[in-house]
Image 1 (tube, rainbow, N blue to C red):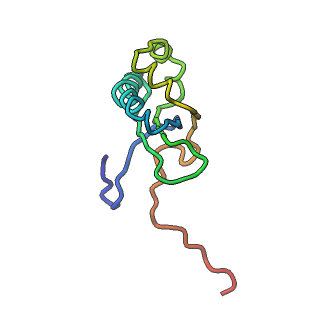
Image 2 (image 1 turned 90 degrees about the vertical axis):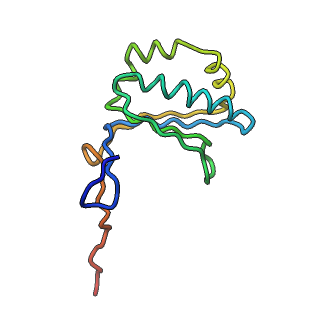
Image 3 (image 1 turned 180 degrees about the vertical axis):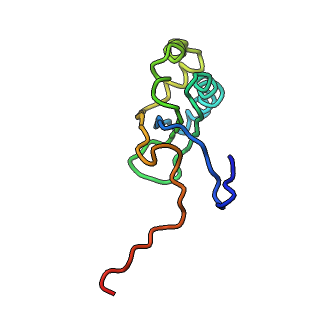
Length: 134
């Protein structure tokens, strides 16, 4: 990640669209699920032009949310309607089939960045309004 010389925080260059995928997988099924996601799914999707990166997370604390999260960074939403994406979705490996059988619940959303127009908001100076009535 490039460093901004004027900041102690790293700068990251990202696309203007993210896809958030949340899934619930029981503990006894995590091995097959994680193997598929890490060894097949991430590599396959990142071959598609317009996919920039992906980051996976496992729930550490919370209620009413699914225990796995993947945030995909995209240039825009067009990769999701590409021929390469359609071809990949039609190609089911044995590991893919097994992993998808253990996903108990999933939710997916595609989000377009609204602020700032591009890049990331990285002003760490804080919010310091004038006190009223002093």
